[in-house]
Length: 252
Image (tube, rainbow, N blue to C red; front, side, top):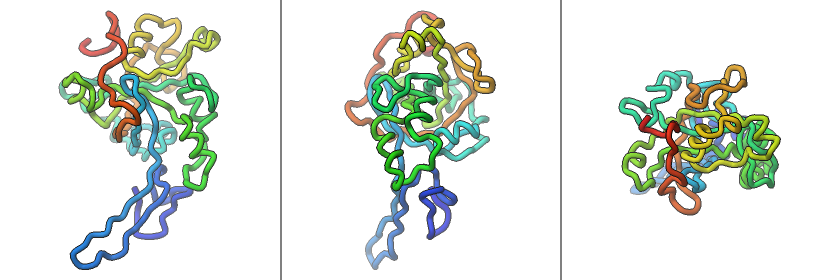
């Protein structure tokens, strides 16, 4: 979270994580006691199985992803087993769902995605406790609002036990038809996203992150280490829909 033992930069983050808002170093502990040090962290809002959750991004395998997630760039993450693995044996990755061009607007309850983060969530600014506009924007939903797959509180043991903090991003691109019709709405459940991609490719496709052009929906080799912290209302327990035939929900 930080390097050194003093003079921590929590404004431009020269020697701290981009999500560190404060560093509190305890004085020397008296005999028989242990005084704790701690940091103030900027958590991230998202969704799993229809419920709001919070998580913390620490590392990402690509430079742009690291910037957007305010995480540390760690190229080795790209070599973690394995792209598209999800629940399959030998894979360290789970699936996360992001959207390039969801709706925008700070008070729009349908806003979500990368454009929303940059336009409404002060994504181009350093995060600090003194940046009140950024803090208030994120408090009111200015985050990416990604959708997560497996979660420790899900009732199905297969998916509860398959949780991993290393996420394999599936990036969605809403089509012009969806955008013009106002159908690029906020998504909050893995199965709903899979079903939409499988049944309505006229509304939602994948995207090639190298070109920004439409591509088949699925894993794109974007890896993020972001551990879930908890849920903010009710625990995620079950997906909102059953998977339709030919969706990418495992087993495939």
